[in-house]
Length: 317
Image (cartoon, rainbow, N blue to C red; front, top):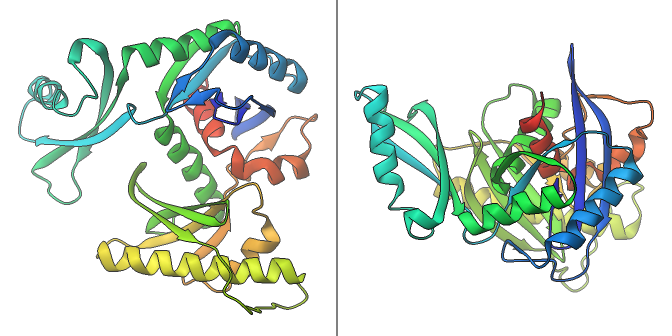
């Protein structure tokens, strides 16, 4: 259940013998200021909206996962001496974590997961720390309970987004090496996030303002699409070049695009102009669909469902 500032997005998955199946999905608009800086304005109306969305899309699950966001929702990568025993590693991480918590330890909920040895220094072990105020966590749990759902997982939004993005990349780029770039296109800008091993390591924003007199027709594409594709390709290429210049030897292996106005025709044009594979961010491409799911509609909506899909992948049986 991805509750954002403008809408609720729901994805229900089931595990099958050969992967996941999409059982239900849907989106429901929310009033302005429902979510401000990661805080929900009123729990009960959101719970009611979730119940109505479940009814509309035929979602039957009683268990749910929710993502938290905002300035107080923190993700950090910590490093400790890999030579320590497991118990000492965890004790060291707990001490180190207090330096990164968004408040006094008694007021913060946090958890961490060991990731293994650092690829940069095999003498160091890495752990991912996720933390948020206990009050924010309690509010998220209250939203799910107001929707008459059993809270199964509450996690930081960016972790769920990365999981959905990994599913989308696997469907188009397979095991190709390199980092994953996500361009979120909206409001005249392309927001870039680069992910490495499930964590965002770089953020940037490129404006998509058209210079006066720009004409960039491509094939038989409509004029407005041709201009948009040219602008987007230029902006994406510039953003990737800046990242490459600042993060050597890290290399982007695939660029995925999300946003309400992002479609396959647009990204096909961009793909021809980037040095890496470009594709629409669709985490459902390799999944089977329940009979009631409209494949064309789901794939059209898919770029906006990355976080909800990532949550459903985390909370599956």
